[in-house]
Image (tube, helix red, strand yellow):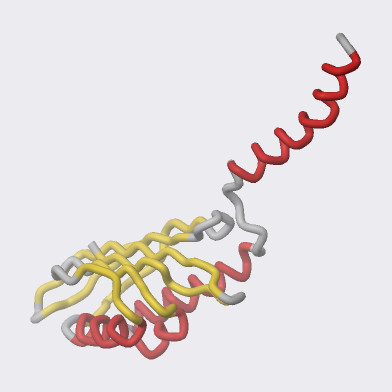
Length: 145
């Protein structure tokens, strides 16, 4: 191996490994316990059907998809009233996150439960993803199926 080739390998090989590691980063540097506490509080708010407890986790904008047909990006204020209307139309009987990925670069949780609407029970599935904004975790996506 020539001296020039050896210098090239020694100079650029570490940079290639560093770039590859940064490009494939899939885990967050935030402790999963911190994210799990946020999911615990969101889970309790959903179970209670309490938008007031959920609203501290609203960012400036949220992707909101409700199986009732409401779908899109909404401001935190719009999201509050849309979810308040949604939860006032049904009584959440049970709910629990059954799957969580708190150490993912974009943490998310999914879970299911039952709700009663006008005397009829229905099964619901929730998907909630978070994003870190200004050192706090906010909901980036809130889906109900």
